[in-house]
Image (cartoon, rainbow, N blue to C red; front, side, top):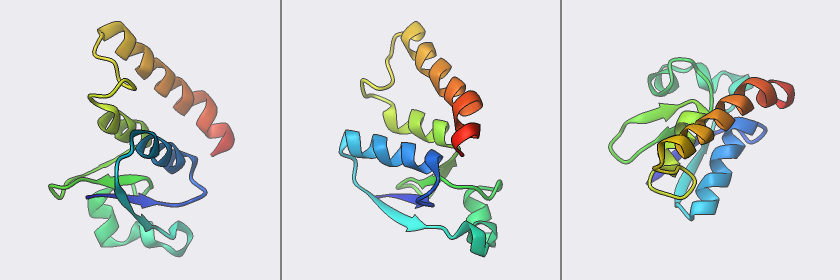
Length: 107
């Protein structure tokens, strides 16, 4: 079962919740109280040395951080991440655009 380390006000974590929901993928949530220091614990820093949410722990004990990397992993093999090289690059283009131009304004 996937485990999403989450902080509800995080727009980056929200993107993950939306895609998991759209794809009907079951997951568990572990809330991380970032202002109380939970993202700076030794255990959390093993998941993400940057100490940020979201983080997605996968079945084999490994974890991935950074919202757009998580989106790419989750979308693999679905229509949300095309196999065509140009179409896939267009998805990446919009993910990079969002992270650079949109997220800083709302985050």
